[in-house]
Length: 188
Image (cartoon, rainbow, N blue to C red; front, side, top):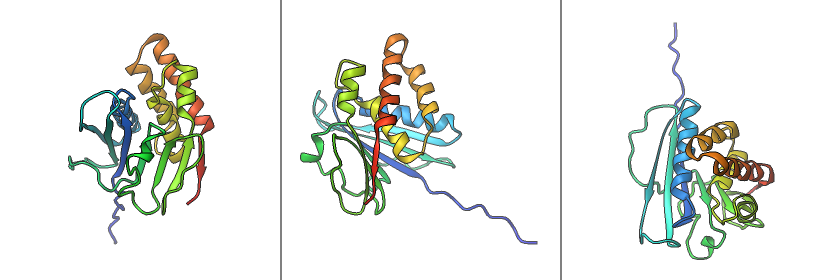
């Protein structure tokens, strides 16, 4: 009799790029909570440089089918989520992305990066329409769910409903759902 050995699915690493006040840290946390709801192990953590509103901010999420012991910053992400459409002009958002990985952009159109897939949505317009402010984190979570299929939109809705309350929760869920519907994926 042979033994059955399950193949280990490697950890999935996501890096969020945003600016202080856009909700990148919250987005990383909400994504980790949604993955946890779906039965995976997950962790989320920020990295702050200059701690001021508008300064570039990094946040990270890891998810796996097994316990995650690594606590280091993510240098070779599978996925990158860019909350601010101007960041690719000042920060190398594609730095270290694994070959064949994906960048999920807040953008009116696709940008080109070598060896990665691109998905994009105009999250700023969605946030302004649904929330009245250019805070794109929940819209970009909807875009991430659509582009990657790694978490279900329903799980994100449940987490957002638990994090926000009342009208704010409704508005954020509406932004997330609109972005989910409007996200486009472009091959390499």
